[in-house]
Amino acid sequence: MNNCIEIIVYVSIKDYAIGQTSMYNVVGRFMTEFQLVRDRLKYIVFLEDDPLDFEVYSDLLSDHLNGVDIKQYDDVDEKFYSKYPPGHTLVLLDLNLSGTKGLDVYKYKLKSYHYTVYVHTSSDNPHDIELCKKQGLTAYFQKKIGKDKIKDQLMTILNFYELNLINKFRD
Image (cartoon, rainbow, N blue to C red):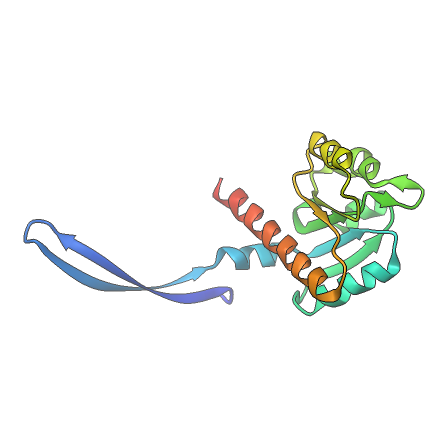
């Protein structure tokens, strides 16, 4: 069980019969929920048409994610589905792709396969946000400028992914 951590929990138990409180140590090995998530996430795919943006994202993420394959696509084809299984892939979708709309890629090529898709775009147009909500996209991140802000945002996206996956494990 290499994904375990040792946890010491101090439990305070009050014996109401004698009115005394005792402390007990409970030592156990538990797999952390976050480790479960990190073991599940194998791929991050940026549906992004700007190679310079992707290079920055990839460099920043590769420092923090060992064993996660980070790729860039500007569209989805049949090979995509076999390379990147939905349960192990996080897709970050730019709404403004060359020659096509990112929302159309989601609606016609990703939605029915149940990928985890978060919008990651430069648009702050309320109409775009509303269209994304109507399509069932629950996470909308406006791209940041500057390496530190981009790094913080990417970590926020990963934390959001982890928390949502943990909630799915609990359900």
